[in-house]
Length: 445
Image (tube, rainbow, N blue to C red; front, side, top):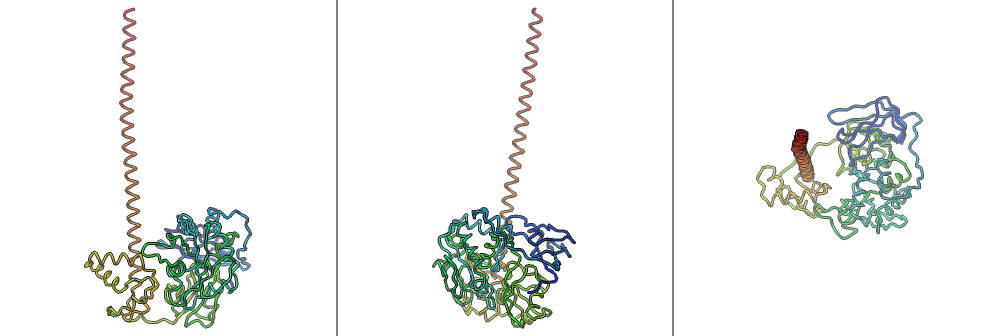
């Protein structure tokens, strides 16, 4: 698509520190915001541009860039570094690679966790189970060399025994086993793929990494291949679909491109439309002037519609049949409702905890519910609440450890001070005794 008139990047002040000033000329690949900690990736300028708007408000920030008229995208530079794990993690982080399948998890962090767990199998997820998504299929059909380069880097750095590509069609990549993914939703879910390929399903808090399996999206593997060649992540393939899109297509889009510009490239005016980042089922509502990010797999546009009327649960059991994780959404909903009202038993609380660990948020239960109950939203809220509680407990434990260490240092200083006083008094007494003895000897002489 044509070069947009502006690029938009948003972030949170508690995860990134702004590294540019308003009016500054940013070069392609230059860091716009530095990550705080190891769980995030830097925000990079995708082309030569000028920082036009820089706003900060209530813990968030937004950076608007105006691309130069002769903007040049980043070019790959061949590297001949040895592909050790440490060098790959460093290059991937420097390139700003985050999960491109929708989650946006920092890829260098996932690599380090996979290496620590000793994974032996890599699954490349190109199933794209949501309706309208076709960017991974386009990538494998027309640019599979980038994926192959990423596979070689991962195979060497992680010492992998098996690499499997899960897709709805057969593709050929050297040294990669191809498995046909199911066509039903949510066949592209990470845990569903692990069960299909390995025959084992990660249940509850057990992650695929704990089973020796790491799952990367096909676009993420291609971005890892680019990082090996010293090319930062500055663009991605995006599927543009939906009832309101006049010319559906797959576009290569610069990161930061506003959603309204992407829709305009497909002959669609964004004004008055409901725009989702991703697909129609798990998509996240966005504003027209928000920017495309690494995790933007697609853009879905549809006319605005009213929310369906929700009714009480009729216990039909359709959600139980639809759940790919073999959970019991109806029972979990009832237990979580009791817990919210303060009427939960120990069994209810245990059932709720299993939902927190096992639910993937695919919304299959929502789709079949005749009462239009937002089951997945409740379960995801419980997950977030539990994560926040765990983070609070961890912070409290760290604070207590710091307090105890401070208290121990203070007691140690006091003990040393008391020992010094006693030693000083003893030394003074010895000196006085020596002087008295000398005087006595002079008196006798």
